[in-house]
Length: 209
Image (cartoon, rainbow, N blue to C red):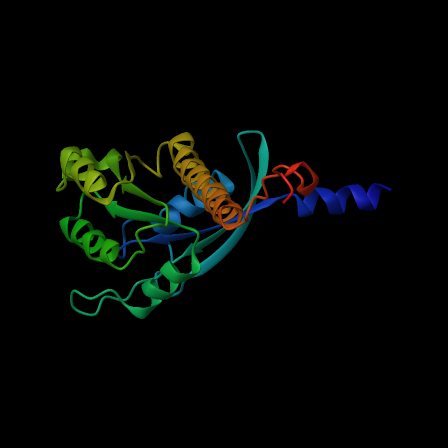
């Protein structure tokens, strides 16, 4: 009986796949690990991508996050196949740039072009703890988010775990809401194609010749 209860609990988990996309050095790994472990680590190997699984409560419901920490290799100004594959794989996209790096902001502009319009996106500007090195203003990030029709936040992986968690949770909510709307739309289309029989007068009530 206990085993069945555990199985039911696992099967009831919502699974959400999030790809974290951005140029090298913007803090994608720091954000991901901060969310997963609450610890901040400043240095990472930027040569490989990593995939993590993490269970968290979102609005009192258990969610299994699968997070893909991408490792872009810039080829001129083009978005590589690695990032494109991640976009195809994900349920939601976390776009990350650094406020201290104008080129990382431009990278995000190019990456967004490749993203399907119906996939939930969150735009995050990292490294606000390094405000003295700022190259990208908050207004520019806000304008870009409006262009993308997505949510936006400036944050610091180094200083604020709660802000980081909020970003992942908010993107998760958008994914789950989009999933519900998609299911409802499918149901509406199915019902819309169903012919409803309206009962009229019986043959016996019709006038006879």
